[in-house]
Each structure stands twice: as structure tokens, then as C-alpha cells.
Image (cartoon, rainbow, N blue to C red; front, top):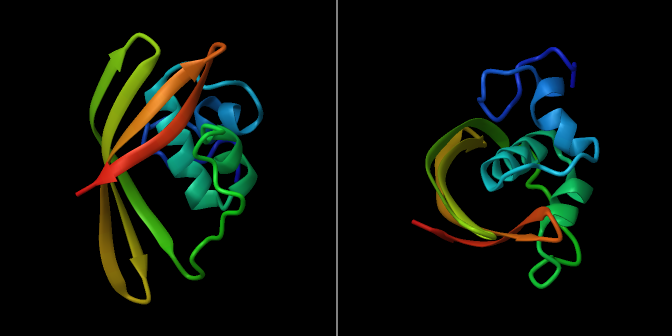
Amino acid sequence: MSPNAPCPCASGRPYAACCGRWHGGTPAPEAEALMRSRYSAFVLGLGEYLRASWHPSKRPATLEFEPGLRWLGLEVRRVDVDGERATVEFVARSKLGGRASRLHETSRFVREDGRWFYVDGDTR
């Protein structure tokens, strides 16, 4: 992805100044930034980043992407932070084989040793 292209996470910033930093190895400073970077990683097919940002207690052994799935947009609805724990509610839109769908999730995050991790989430 071009560093100057708009970031897939819909922040309005260029990729290099947004999720590109986190994908490059700098730890995301907050749970919302990590959630947005994970969405962008799904868009870009960055499986190793997704696995590394998953909490080790819930991290899948492998991760496969749905062939032909296109991510169309992200809306962050709510962010709640309570010390070392956070939740982020979001809606991600996608399309597969001409059929549109939405993923509405409230994700749980935890910060350990100064680094945020995705734990799991509840979908609606």
C-alpha cells in the first residue's frame, strides 16, 4: 500500500501516519488504534500482524482469509477504557460474491507490559 494513500481504517490520515506505523512494529498507543490497525490488517491481508496483536491466551494457531472478501469500511461507535482494559464497539462492512454484510462487534482489549492486545469480542 502506498504510504500516502488514505488509511483503510477510515481515520482520514495517510496510511504511513496511521496504521502503517503499527504494522511496521511500533506498538499501538491505545486500544482504538490497535482495533483500527487490525481492521486495516484484514483489508491488507497481514495475517502475521493480526496473530501478533492477538492476546497469547486467545491467539489462533493459524489464520486464513476468505478468498474474494472485500472490506468496504469501518465505523467506530464507542470506546471505553478502564486502566489496562478497554472495549471498542465497531461496525465493519464487507462484500463477498456480490453479497454485502456487516460485522458489528464489541471487542475486548488488554494492555500488558505497555502493549495492547486484542482478546476477543461479542458480535451482534
